[in-house]
Image (cartoon, rainbow, N blue to C red; front, side):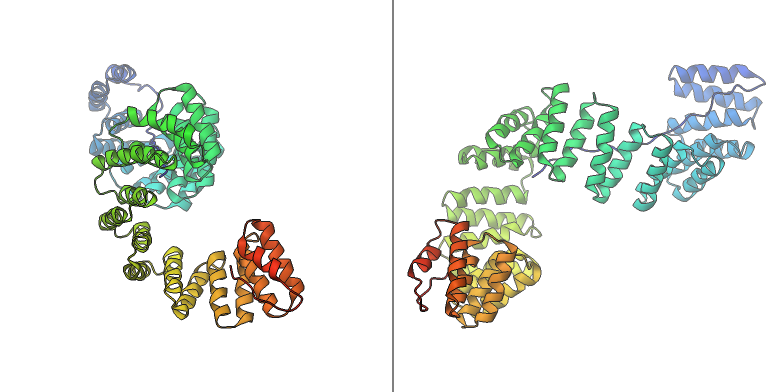
Length: 485
């Protein structure tokens, strides 16, 4: 599991330009002073008092509406800003703030009209482009949002919030490489913010840029050395690179600091499992399950711990629990079939592979497992049909191509057998069984030169591969007996 930090969506509310009203300025000026002192309630009261004397003054209306918006008084905000726009339709700032008020009130269509009115007054107005982009993200119109973020950043290339929100939108859409680009811009602009480094690291983990993620989390840890979330992210990045012992130090520290955090405890279980410390892994997974009792991934991993230790009966029980917890999760279905087979329940294992294929008909793993089960059961016709289904799903599955070739070889169909062995070698040029089996086909066709070539290629790929050794040693000028891989 790759934990991700939450990427915050930042909204922007603008204040109107500070312009003093010409008449009866006392209440208005008092409102400005209170606003600067962050007394928003007092400021709004003062602006509303000023409006009693000048009910149609656009500047006072704009300020009253903006402060009402900031204090969550949305009906008043909309009312004042609509009146301000009517009194001064040429103010891009008031149009933009009216858009913010509409958006906050859930009136998205009106908000867009207001933002576009501001842009009609100034096509390069950053705030309106930025707020319109945020609005489009809320509406899941990502194409329009991306265009507006680009226009906002063209107007203000170094705006951190625009890069953050653009990155968030790209991440939400699954365009991770470009989301990472935006977060890289953020850390260049604000290198001393550890949260930005952690958000970048989280995206890099999701995009499987583990070395880059480790570097981002290291930057965060230089700023906040004991931050558990940064320790956890760094540990996960190390784990994904196979640096399990180093990962343990950091993930264990994060889990100790975050005993109530499921992700930390779960990842600690992963690291201990990779290090074959099964008791510690089981303890960590059980701690995770106290936090999320029905987490199917955790239950599945507990089953795999039992499987690796040879407790196949216990593995069967755990995998069944994982299936019950989340019937949409494929892995426990496959693992249950494997555990049943290892537990000597071959008939039940075959039924479970069939069940897995019924539930996940397009699953490469489920179909390959079922094909292997048919092959082991001696039903080569069903095995061949299912291997062909696997290569239909993924033509580059070397194991399925090789095994389909074996089924054709059983039928003495050397042409089709050779085609599938060739496909297996094309998918994996160093797959010793397929290389050896091609040698067998050529030997049975009487082409001893090419047979020797492929036996040697199989041994080059795997010097300890016994079938190729035996076939090469036994090869005579006339066709002899050959071992299949």
